[in-house]
Length: 511
View 1 (cartoon, rainbow, N blue to C red):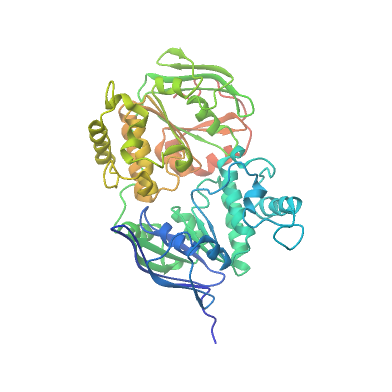
View 2: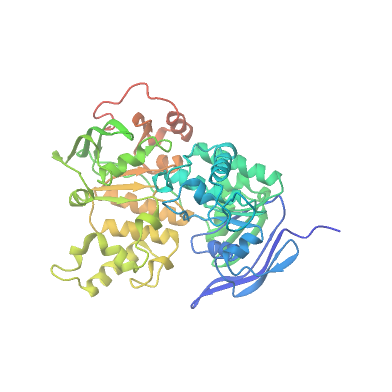
């Protein structure tokens, strides 16, 4: 007699008010299987996975685990059923260390009763085993996680799921915050979990990566299943076609030639422990990519330019004049704009509307003495139309939007300020293929208008497809500068892991 599937979801339906998010979804998962789940932002992937994890209640359908029908009406019920989820938006306690986060709610104790003292030593030891030995991640165990890099926090989130010993593990965009080396380590871990009989649902917008990991791919569109096929029958174009219901136009728009006049000059910029003696020049309308491993100084440099973590020394010139960036207010006065990688934590204001989120960086545009709600509605409505933001209008709750549309709201916020320098940190993290192409078009349009752009990204293909040049950082220094149109991803990866032969002089990034 054959074994029943490890997991079977039948006829799963979900509504949010008048919006139907899921239309009777069926999903089957067997032990030792890695199932890819793809779809555009808003297709229903996250809603389906949150129902499976017990975070959302379903309105229709049944869920069977190991042949038994169960109710997953809260996250504890999901955990008790052997289901763990790694959320795309990290759910860590910022003031807890890695070990405390990994075992939050499942703390190890000295004795087997509820009030026994916590066994901190064993939790640290186990956290170290999972992070260092199993995942190969060099994550500090004892410091608060808010002091860790984004990729290290992502590794803690992954370790948290692995520590639960769950049989079904949901991974929602697990590699979006990871560099190439870390991605390879995670993929190796997935293969080991699969070999041990664990089942994994792998949600990702990285289709090429997903096809190399999964045995089967399920595609959702508008809350319905439109494909469920073995990987052998698929390629990237077929998956994209199923996702969007047609062929995708060219992902990267044509590069707009940069102007000859310089916009930004940086000389000898240094920040102790982050980067040292960085110099470059940037022309108006130029898009400069910055590549490098986590900790190379690329994100620290971006944040120093925006005044979040100001540099210790060095000079910054804008349009030929020396300026001082001591804080974000200085940066905004200079018409610098910054879009951070962590949308939910640093980008959007979750308790406010789309219109409020668009207008907050330039309140002067909404009235000279008092803010005019009608003006906010008109301004936000104009950007919603211009950027193709899918929502019910300026009054809509920002949290009701998909990740790609939230990203476009943040771009609209800064485009409203008419920036001369746009600083983008992982601008398409967690964004689907169609929304990516739309974001790329918006960036190119800003460059065409004369805005200079600096992009930090872990996606080398993105940097090469979008930018004019790419600077690769290694241990706080610029290792090399490459022409994006003639370089390959492998070249960027190589320079990211080896020391520079010589530092680039001032102007080495210009031309």
